[in-house]
Image (cartoon, rainbow, N blue to C red; front, side, top):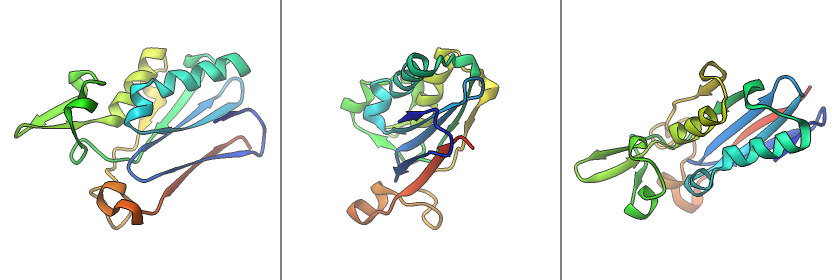
Length: 154
């Protein structure tokens, strides 16, 4: 979702997938992205930035990006079919099992677009590990609640 309307709030609900929030500080536009592995593999961050560029004149150099919380590489075990969608540098192989760093995959997409490293904030908190603070679909299955991430223009 993207907008440049003032006083309109965009909301993403997640439970292990990553919320990615974008703010164009020059053109006063924002985006809220739900970035699970499928969306990330399909390039959801570049797609949102392209949409913002087409609608509002956004340039990556004017973006501030916030990523997370979501399931961390400590807990996000993946199969080979998911691993094939991502660069090896985003995975850890521990005891023959693969773990994906989905936050870093989204960060890499933002960097490749030209967003300054200093303008990207990765929360770094794992929703699976922090059961007292966050919902986790992997941990709670269908009973998992959802966290809400919001962004808007005042």
